[in-house]
Image: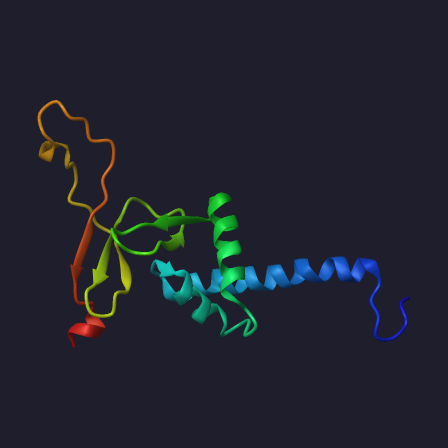
Length: 139
């Protein structure tokens, strides 16, 4: 046992992992609450409700790790910083509000867009983003 005010090596080694677990749990909970793609800054604000000391660098480290592990996927809209969403969604598209800039999932697809490609071209994938005002901004 360590003297009061000091920690043994085993306790000190566990503490960063416990903090990372708490931080990652707060990040996961933020995605669950938001239920939409999030910017790192949006994620930070939501996750700080559970872990007030959370900083943006930690959010980015976790986003990188969670993306590499396949837990998250990147949502890249033209001219925008990347947003992140939980992986595992079926094929879907996005809606970006032109007033508040938030992005929402659209769980629908117009279908086979290959007919729009020039003759002889092969469509391998597509991304579709709708733009307009969200329900909150159009009220």
